[in-house]
Each structure stands twice: as C-alpha cells, then as structure tokens.
Image 1 (cartoon, rainbow, N blue to C red):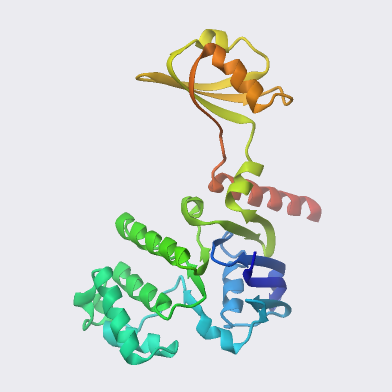
Image 2 (spheres, rainbow, N blue to C red):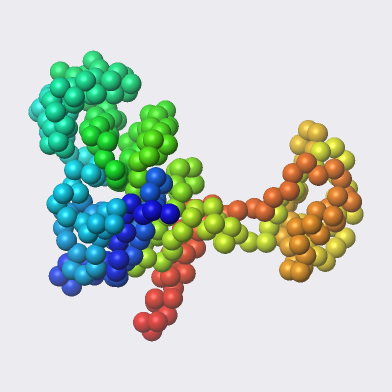
Length: 315
C-alpha cells in the first residue's frame, strides 16, 4: 500500500518541554487517518511540522516518498482548529484571495467557489463581511477554501467544532466524498464517535509519544473482551440458558417478538461454533456477534494505562 505521508522518529522540543518524542506515523494513500490524543499530547505540533509552520529537531517527514520541502505546501490543504478569516474583509473577496495563494487562477477560483457556495447554501453571503457570519458559516467558508485547490493531502483539525448536527453531518458527507475521490485525509478530533464513523486508521499520541496505531476495526477487535450479544426471535428459555459454567449471562432484554442476551465467555477453549451450538438449544438465534468496545473506551483505557505505567516507572 502506498503511503501519502510518513513521519519517522520525529522529535520536537520547546525550551524544557518535549512535545514529540520519536513519533513515527504512516498515512496510507486514499484513507482517512485519525490523529488522536488528549490536550497537549503533541498532535498540533505534528500537524504544524507537516505544514512546515515549524521544523522537527530530529526525524524526517516524507510526502509521497519525497522528503518534505517547500514545494509540498501547495499540495496540502489545512483547516486549523483556530479559524483564521479576516473579519473586516468581504467573504467572496477573501475566498478568492485564499484560493489564489494556493496557486489557482482567479477565474477558475471564482467559478469553483460559486459552485461550492451554492452547494453549502451561503451564496447570499458573498458580499457580506466575515464578521457578519455565524461561526458555522465562517467554518463553511474556510472548509471550501481549504479543499478547492484539490490538494493531495488534507488536514482537518476539529472540523466539526461549532457545527449543529445537520451541518456537521453535511461536512462529514463531504469529507467521505473527498476520500471517495482519492484524497488522503488526516483528521484530528476528540469526538471518538466520529472516529468510528469515518476513520480507516488512527494513531494515538499521549505525552509526546505514540502509544497506539493501526486500522480502526482491527484495534476494536484486539481490545474486545470475551463478551457476546445474542438476539433471539420468539421463544427463549432463560432458565435453561443459565445452567452452565462455560459463560455468564450479563444482561437480558426482552422486546416484542424476541429477546437480547449479553454473555461473558468463561471457558476460553470454546470457539464461536461451540457457543452458537450451545445457545441454539434455548431458542431461535436471529443474530450473534462479539461486542466491540467503542473507540472512546479504548482511548480512555490506553491513555490511563500508559499514564499509570509512566507514574510507576518514575516512583
């Protein structure tokens, strides 16, 4: 698999503070890559290095196999968490200016901006000053100017911040469409539900170190406990189901037409086929699946475990 971005052993220090400690990440081409971590973990520092706002003290960053240099600036679209539009400038004039900074011709930028303004239903704000727009409207404008020059790599830092659910979903669908059309996207957020919905891969940074990375579904499977959810349609004999030492019933929920049972496997030698064979004796199984932890649960668990290990090592 081709890698759009590779960071190798990146180190960055600010005075006595170590912001990044030999951090390495690989972002596959055409994916949405979640860059996660608590506040102050080092995510923004890595993003600033990729955008060449600052430089690493050690380590190397590559874009499409080439060492990161000034020529790559135009190949990156960056939507920072702290938005940066000029408040007194007209919206359309500013959007044209920002697109031209990225190398677009004015006529091309004007034509494409008009399409996106209509798509996002902000065409009537073209001649308004930025300060007259709501925060959500301003974010729409900055999102458009970030993607309009069709960069190979897009970096979105908390892109849904300040959006209502409808507009957040609109932006989410546009991000998925960008991926579908071949864009590689680095997505930094604290919203773990968004990570589950749109990210293919993640890297988790905590206290300047990368502590977890990989494919999202694989990580959820790796951290899944031996808990299974079984749904029955029609008859379900709960009394007989409890007569076993191979598993423990954690929860049973009854609803019209069936029941749902959660069990914890106690006999580690049992396979899925063994479990299903046993459970079919108690009713008609409609669905059977292993319960996967949320990315939010994994985030908290891994960060807390790492913090505890570091505290123990210091004592």
